[in-house]
Amino acid sequence: MQTETIVASDSHLGRSKGDSITRPSLMKELAGRGIRMTAQRRLLVGIIQDSPRHLDVATLLEIARKQDGDVDRATVYRTIALLKEQGLIDELDLMHIDGEKHYYEAKTSRDHCHMACFRCGAIMEYASSSFEKLKKEMVQQSGFQIRVVRLEVGGICKRCQKTGS
Image (cartoon, rainbow, N blue to C red; front, side, top):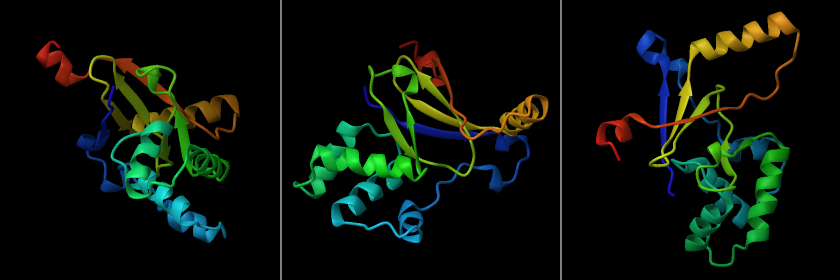
């Protein structure tokens, strides 16, 4: 099942453009940390950075091999491990809509929810000021220091509801 990513936010509530989901440059982050960038690593990081959808290892490898036939699976896994170790990408299961695959995306400027359509496989990213408020409330009430937030919601998207597919 192919997934597409649709980005949404609560900007219709009068929020500024600063409330949108953005992704910092992985290349700049790695360079700033003194990480050595081979041509294949640069290729893989660029694909992850520029992808309009969440990628699993097989898809990342397939895209990379179209540009460099010498890229192998081990290089993909090492690059993903490096990016995870540096805290630059998130690993997601996206409601396991396509089996047990794990998907990767560059960390974003805001925590956001992933909504997965069980019918068509669309993935919607949703950021909300209400979500930010909930996190603050959780910290205040529990004293817990939040480092990672992952929220996935499964259901049927608006398009599939309309088409009845």
